[in-house]
Image 1 (cartoon, helix red, strand yellow):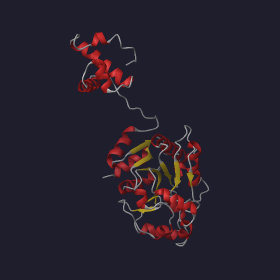
Image 2: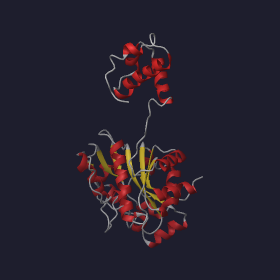
Image 3: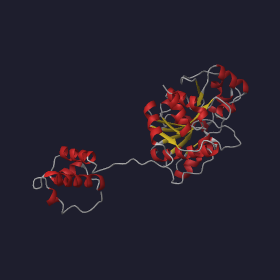
Image 4: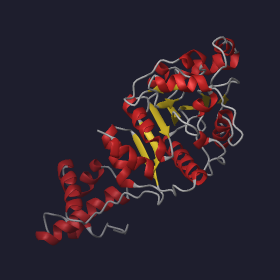
Length: 330
């Protein structure tokens, strides 16, 4: 349907002078052109064509039913609509993006999922939002968003994990504020302290106190999802061998911003809890939009647990992981 002048058409499509199928089709076309292409309201269209708002609504409905107007939903080529919709419906998610990516290249897979998460954040975040970023491999080491980013505040919500092959959470925060120009709120502390006395020291630092005050104002969070195993969780890698085994014996299956879950999505209390630095479970649950990010099919049980827990209400993952999550979901 092209946007052509329709002033001359009014005399031809006035329903009081033209009867039959042709006149109705012309009337539907005029209404649809004004509504979809010229972005006029139903009230404006009703006044221009001498119709009621109910008649305008009915003509718009009929224009879709007859195929005169065809609405297509276009997704980027690297997103899978069917799996995204299935996951969204199964777990009642606000947002869901499943990416197409080669499973045989972990680095490429991580980068593609990370870029998809960045694109989703670019779409949903506004200047009025306060965004929280956790320690997650998928957002580390990526280039700044090419299309820029909203001028919003970005807050570090977990401590950092020292890794040779990835940038830390502070750099992930900075990449968004570099692109958008908003303020970055950071604190220098590890995600897992070696002793129980460590967190109290770090929590008294002014930078952490300032970030913690902003935890209550967060509107969007980007959250890493980890599985309890080698190469699958930054917390697992930061924990001692004894901590890992103790958590495994207690049934830990997943890790979400330092909170450990069993395979049913229930919080598991472990000795690590007193040594974690970051956002609390209550503070996290109060954030309206919580986007989980994960890749690697080995995380299927962990992702399912995170979705069941309610700690996240949106997700960005790869194709194979999405299929595995759905396969084991009730």
